[in-house]
Length: 192
Image 1: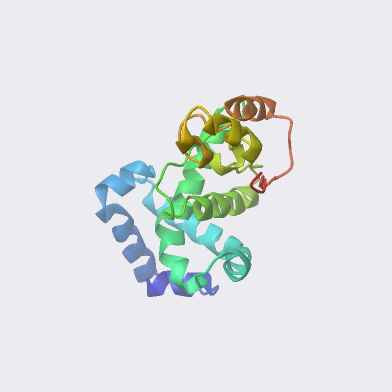
Image 2 (image 1 turned 90 degrees about the horizontal axis):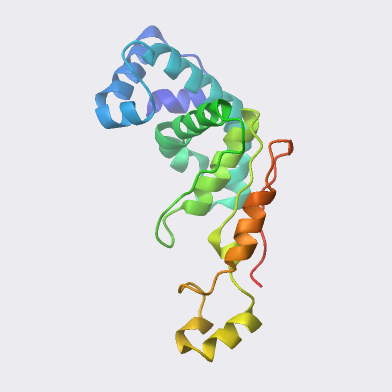
């Protein structure tokens, strides 16, 4: 990953470096397929990814300093191998649709869903795609509503079980997102 570290620092690659990055991108066949990287487009894809890395790295560094417990160097491999190509793929999907694009992120507690959403928001904003980041945590019923639910089932006082989310609010919120919304919004609602 020394090559990527040099790219992030703003240095140029040698032809040998580019070839090594291309070989690495094609080495994992499933990853290459997932991110639409082929032998025909690998050079262009890697160079575009390198330009994107250099463009967003100052903002990414600031993100790491203010919103992450990790250093930019500690997350550089994940940024290069997952977050950048995933953001590019999502941008292509957004471009192909005539309506807001919704992408869900599934994972257990503490697996990095919020970080992934925040980093994708950062990269997609740079690519010109406004985003709205919404967590299922933002849709819990109020504590007083859950107290009422507890009379039916004591487990429903806790957040998480079926019935503790405000499904109507979620549907209303998703329905209110329109293509004409042109500002990047990072939606966060404190726990109610």
